[in-house]
Length: 71
Image (cartoon, rainbow, N blue to C red; front, side, top):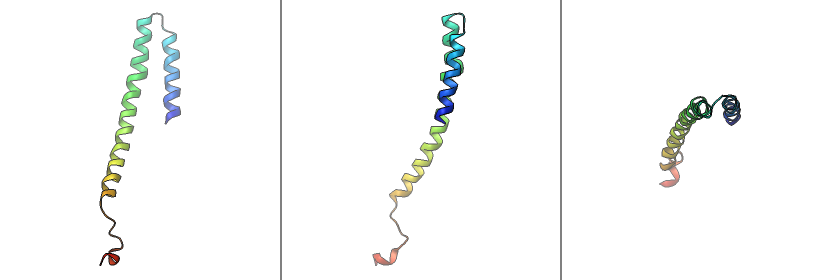
């Protein structure tokens, strides 16, 4: 996933450098690069955070697989 993000930022940076004005270069950099990638990273990170939260909730419960030793 990281290589895709780096490659996309490289392409967008080259697109921004090819623009004729600084304002258009900044709009290109933010519009095609940083904003879409921020959304992508947020969406991917959200699913990872959700999975780690579920794992964390499960780890709070005691292990009841071998209950005979408790009695």
